[in-house]
Amino acid sequence: MTGIRNLDDLLAEGVSGRRVLVRADLNVPLDKQTGEITDDGRIRAVLPTLSALVQAGAKVVVCSHLGRPKGAPDPQFSLRPVAGRLGELLGAPVHFAEDTVGDSARSTVAELADGQVALLENLRFNKGETSKDDTERGAFADQLAALGDVYVDDAFGAVHRKHASVHDVPARLPHVAGRLVLREVEVLSRLTGDPERPYVVVLGGSKVSDKLAVIEALLPTVDRLLIGGGMCFTFLKAQGHEVGTSLLEADMVETCRNLMERAPGKIMLPVDVVAADAFAPDAAHDTVPADGIPSHRLGLDIGPETVAGFAAALSQAKTIFWNGPMGVFEMAAFANGTRGVAEAITKADAFSVVGGGDSAAAVRALGLDESSFGHISTGGGASLEYLEGKTLPGIAALEN
Ligand SMILES: Nc1ncnc2c1ncn2[C@@H]1O[C@H](COP(=O)(O)OP(=O)(O)O)[C@@H](O)[C@H]1O
Ligand SMILES: O=C(OP(=O)(O)O)[C@H](O)COP(=O)(O)O
Image (cartoon, rainbow, N blue to C red; front, side, top):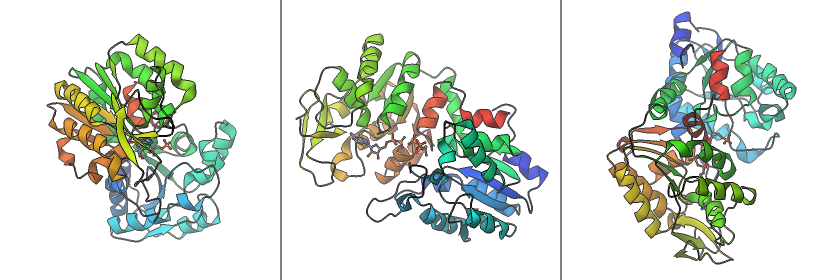
């Protein structure tokens, strides 16, 4: 991050009375039934930046995405509950704008007193935020930038997205990196140079197409790649196995086959999986061999034999990076794989990094000791792409 100005530079300049637009990643997991926040780790992670700005008397305007709404308001993805939780953590109410750049946002920001905080409604309720069209994205960035005098990027989990709030707003306002972005990059850079070997990467989760692309780039630099979670079924299919109704990226099967041929023995796949009748906490389920998933069932966790194999590989490692739960850990019946792998990582004599909103939430939900990991990153896709050595749009924008 050479040449990038950071929050301390901005504070030294003085922010009292200035409107500081902070891009945060407040994309927290919500309970599907109650809508309650199930893990507030990403909110806590941005507090050092926000508190410093509050104390310095800034008018703090926070913006974020939540989930993947389709460019229009969708109540299930509202940031309103996040405003409540952020206020509790800051110890002062957070003013909530009902829209992102409309009348409500403009008046909420105009009414802020020095040292007060506002949160704008979900950025992704606006088509321009994620648009691939530069003009459409730019027009939205213009409206967003008008709500601040200066911009702080503290959304590490989103720095790999070429989105208006991450990539285009910094071209329109004086900009700095926040405390979280700075710390994440500092720690992750330890894995990009010459990591101590064996270097083992564990991948799972559900954002299969996003992350399959990264595997290709990471494969030459790692010693072992352990694949579980929703990610493994496209590989199992590529091995010629039937995967029932499990998560599958059909048009990536050929890519997976090529990856396995290119690095024989490097990729470890599950040998058994927990296959269920339905995606539900009380669904009937059994452990079956990975080549014997019944056609009407879907794999929701890795099985015990796989956990033992992965744990053995992890016990040899000197550097570990893990992104993506090994199963649907939110349901107790499918949490054993994630727990087993997480415990194996904590026992290894290695520098370990866990990345990703859900992976970090899993560590906490399963009651594991956070301090037994070297670093818990707020970004999954972002840290993977950082490790790939890519110039990330959000970081590049801060450099300019
Ligand atoms: N076999 C599976 N089938 C469907 N979803 C899965 C499976 N294994 C894990 N998941 C889901 O993956 C989600 C996390 O994926 P992802 O967003 O890629 O991770 P992270 O946020 O850590 O980067 C969790 O909500 C989990 O329930
Ligand atoms: O949850 C996130 O990423 P992650 O699941 O890779 O950790 C970030 O908030 C980015 O969200 P996105 O993958 O919908 O752009």
